[in-house]
Amino acid sequence: MVSIAQGWSGAGHPFRFGVGCRKLGRHISMTTPPALPTAGGCWNHDHVPSLVVPVVAPGQLSGTSQPTLQTGSILLRPWTAKDARAVVAAYQEPEIQRWHARSMTLTEAEQWIVDAGIAWAQESGVSWAVDLEGQLAGRMTLKFYLADAGAGVGYWTRQAARGQGVASQALLVATQWAFDHGIHRVQLEHSTQNPASCRVAAKARFAGEGIRRSAALHADGWHDMHLHGRVNKMQAELESERSPVTTAPGAD
Ligand SMILES: CC(C)(COP(=O)(O)OP(=O)(O)OC[C@H]1O[C@@H](n2cnc3c(N)ncnc32)[C@H](O)[C@@H]1OP(=O)(O)O)[C@@H](O)C(=O)NCCC(=O)NCCS
Image 1 (cartoon, helix red, strand yellow):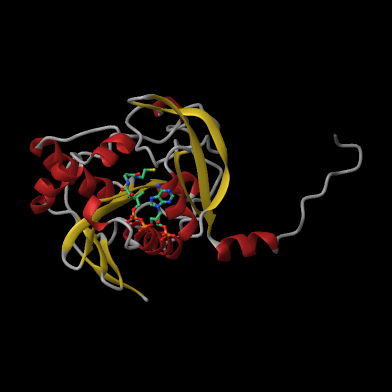
Image 2: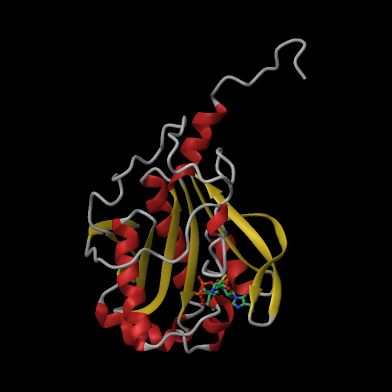
């Protein structure tokens, strides 16, 4: 059972990774695939109105406080300054360092938490602290690509809490929340050398969509990345009911 309550929303910088081809780079979380080119392609069209009506209207998400989500004894809640030391400890764990390719000082962790609050306020993403029975067990982040009503996922679970369904349950709840709020597609990717993350994706019903060869640079070199996605079923059903596109006689 999933329940949703309203929670804290903070302030600070936006997440460092951005949307659009020109901003792709090393700041992107290991499980957050780069934004795919939108209908407008790679060129920056920030000052040219789009012909596409947005599915998620600007302000629709940030107009409320960041929600808190619960499933069983797992709680997804906004980060608070009190989490900073636990975040530092998490990023000292070898597996988290390996797959997220960074470590953090206390000051950096405090800023990271502030950035999460601002990401919500700016509708560039949402990041939850994941508690298991009252202890910080992990992180679940959705980076929004609202031009395409899309989101990319990042997650980790602290070593002591692994193997108890924390990441997969949190991913299921976060994805359902995203679909309930107009997100059409949620995607994630992991190194092909990270089978535990692949299992998390499968348990959360993310279909495998192929391998992006040599797509991510980790500390030990280039990794092939396995892409997974889920599409909001209701939205997909609506689309399948649309009239099929036909080609006019004589057209190529
Ligand atoms: C990957 C990670 C998030 C999983 O978190 P978790 O809370 O333990 O995940 P869950 O308990 O929901 O599921 C883990 C599944 O992976 C399986 N698993 C664990 N290690 C595995 C391995 N080496 N090979 C294959 N499967 C593995 C578990 O058995 C479990 O599957 P099961 O329930 O069918 O037995 C966690 O290990 C982690 O944080 N790793 C380091 C950071 C990371 O990899 N982040 C993701 C980057 S893409």
